[in-house]
Length: 346
Ligand SMILES: [Zn+2]
Image (cartoon, rainbow, N blue to C red; front, side):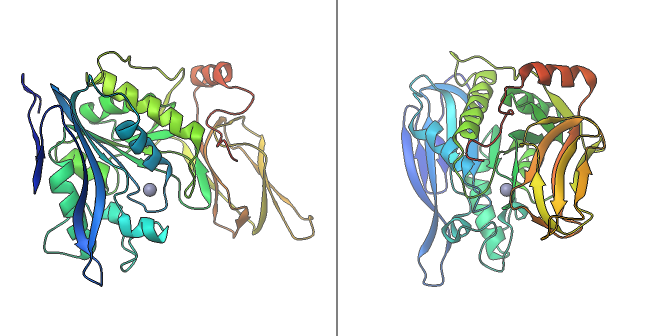
């Protein structure tokens, strides 16, 4: 926590004093060959006292957008006047990242269901434990960056437990249009860190296997706004996204699912406003006949859509979030000809 004088950041095996930056490769496991599995961590300890904030990405190994966000904050921003400490972890799931897959290759375990971890348990929980105790628990708040699952994309949005005042403050400060509120599944970094007294939010942005520049820039704006809110960057201002909807867990939010198998012709981009009755997509057969139209059951914003355009019945097509009338009007004022948050390379 912040005192009058800046403190050293300490972890098992080292310390970073005020005014210092350290690039660390920190061992969290060992391979079959006995080589260390090490995660890259950059710790920037400002000369002036302030909160300690972690930024993490690639807990799912193929979700890349956040990696670039964390690296740019750590290595391209001018942090000479930083008040506080940043703990930057661009790649949490190193084995998954090397294999370019979501889960740890070891028995396909989900690192993001393994927190806070345990020193005597499975390989995944041991890795999670070393990350959590050294680099998460010492922090005051955190931001964990993700993308949609492979084959889908989503607009940039925040997932946070808005019932928790401290988490809510952090979520609002990130300045996204859409916040989806839930406490999150147990074992996720944001849920377990928040439960351990380190308010944490998840950022969802775009597709796996991509660096999507527009989304990366939006997320960097969000991080800047958070660091302004908590006083780490005194010269920056907290930003407002223009319009916002907070979707509660039990509100109208729907993954529309396919009722027919086929190839999907999507008529809207991710982030678009669709009105009740609009045809969102068409499921087509190999002969382009007996097509199935999928219409919006209510007016809302397309938070997520599928990218890989093939479905079995029951597969998700798009994630539609209902908007109230004032929010819809604000979005219409805000929306540029190329829908907000549309992936730049879509
Ligand atoms: Zn993820």
